[in-house]
Image (cartoon, rainbow, N blue to C red):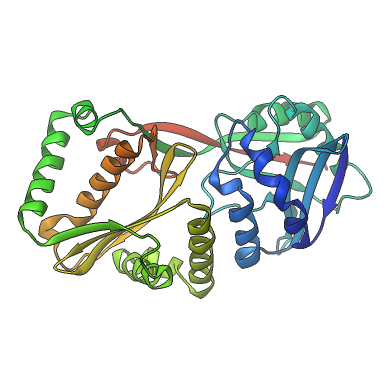
Length: 337
């Protein structure tokens, strides 16, 4: 195994053609590790020093460790995965299936070499439970004498989707099933609603502005989160994911006015609920957020997707809609003093 290290954004261009094919062979393949997401995140939100570490076996790409190095105010030097932490729900090192131990070993060799920068911690966030990184890499690092800490970082509730909408409803509690049907009947009976998913007929930039406006209106924390830098990232990510066919931006209108929105991703047999917004001051009687969520679940079933992934956060409403908890992990590897 040989490593090749790229220390500027040109590394994304150099690895473009090989990146996603390698990811497809990964147990924890996720949109947040695609070339599109990673390169866009780095362009708009990246900080510190970039280290794209490509691991090759006889010229064949076997792994990528997309890392960046930051230094805290107290001088602590930390390596993190590109995308970590707030806007990327699943992250990992990328290694071909069956090659994980070799890729992790090559990464640890590089970290111990003179080519690596000075570092104190490798802080790897949001690792999916299906990945061996939080267990195998932890074990390998501990065997080399590093301090290792692994913890459950968050919960991602996921609905396993059946083949039909009625089957889904019947899987819920009687009370929740009644509530969904009642809210749908009330909204549809009003004769005032319309819902749609943005496609080529729409102006994506304008639709994203509408999403951001509803997102900011829905909660003060969301308003503070969506600063100018984050708006730029959301617009850029929406454009590149739309071009890849992975964006699912949905709106519910009442009397022609946008009342609720969901920014979802359609990737690898799963619909992922990335973010949402609504107008809390109008049309509350029609429960537009719940109605739009119900439409999106029904649409996912019609598309034949197997999972409806709420991503990070164990809010109660997700479980009322039939989600089951899955864990994501944080792995911290520290040098001994």
